[in-house]
Image 1 (cartoon, rainbow, N blue to C red):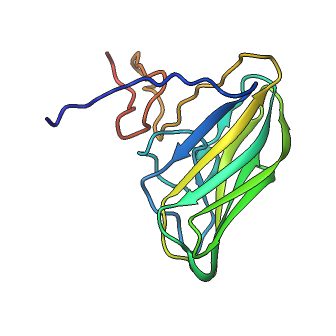
Image 2 (image 1 turned 30 degrees about the vertical axis):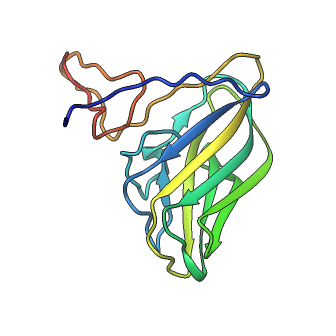
Length: 180
């Protein structure tokens, strides 16, 4: 009781694609644009700076779907638009969770090149109820079998000592750089 539990999930898709889920523990701002990591466990926070949560895409692929969800409905006449933001310049695949809904889906096709960056941009309209965001992207790799596994964190490594970071995990609350 009270111990940390870790697990690994192996899944098989119905085609040549994989899923990239992300979530955060901090409610999105009700008035300002926020950014969240596009992949993570449930311990990430929001930021008003896109580059805090960008991930680098290591291989060519295509984003074909974005599913966005909130843990509470925004309210009548209110919404959160969740965008896949490419290279901190272009919003693609926008899923807008509106009114009494808690989930929305966007489909399309956005090619990604090795070296591109991605972040989820969250834009509130009409002072919606404060909700935590969850997203899942469908990614189709150009080379069959390639899968991206990445980590977001809010701190960098030490500038004076050798430090280590987990390969993949739940984010900054348990993913701090350390010396062992």
